[in-house]
Length: 379
Image 1: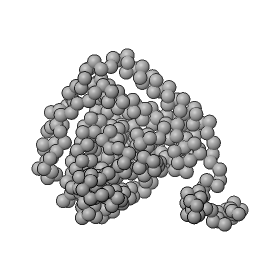
Image 2: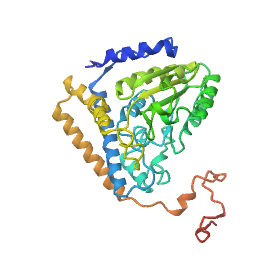
Image 3: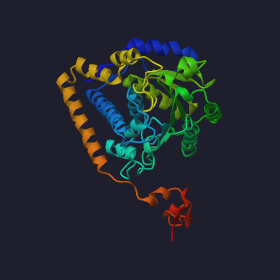
Image 4: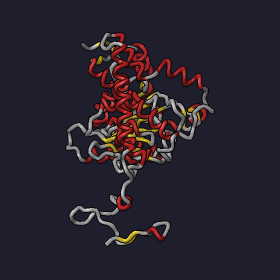
């Protein structure tokens, strides 16, 4: 049986206080229901994300994962809530903090960890690493290593969705997710201007995790109400630590932009537990008490667990048993990933050069490598 969504008063006050600012004639609902099956699935996916990221932390410290690595723990409700509202016809592109979005978009834990190891069994055959996952099958256009670069690309995806949809039909939407650290970039406004002029089905989604690298939003932004930054483009802010709030809000947003009303700005008020990346301890510009306070009062996974237990959908023991099973699944995936292997050298040049008339990958006759002795010749 469905149960009332908790925190209705808070959500209602947030929505009504913003409507006069964001100038929308309609708004997301102030109440929502969630079935046991839905909440269990949200818990399963978010806890898998959490364990996967903790595992990545351990493996990075063990030096089996190299290079850049940006973890998502704390922000799981955003990825899961957005994914619950969209479908695989919608286009999704995000920032370099993309492991968990890739998981929600169809990759497996084993594929993701393999990719981080640089193995050919990875999501993109070991060529993407931490920042560049991709799935054409599920219209996931990956993470971008350059801050904010995904936003113009996402706007192009929205243009393609509108271009390919017959007049009068609802359009698949495109969402570009970026952080508060990218929110003031000029390229975002340029993309937003075109999206507004052409009424593209585009969602500009700011994951406001309070810090752009090591700089707080108060120090970096003259306007910290990021959902208002679209000028004449409407905007809305959601509780990014509440998966049901994100789901309900994004259902409204998907319908709004897909119906031909043009783009919208969405701000997800969220928090990251790790530092900006694995090279950042995350404690020099914020204190540990702040992190502990957020974990104890706003953790997205604990919110779902509390609802399941308080409404007698799942017992405390049932929750613990689920978590135990997920921890084992992640460890099994790690073990399988470690059994993978490096991609062959030829894979380095695959999917870069144009295919021949039969659609077969075509190598150039000669590729000059930085070390001339390692240059490649292809017959």
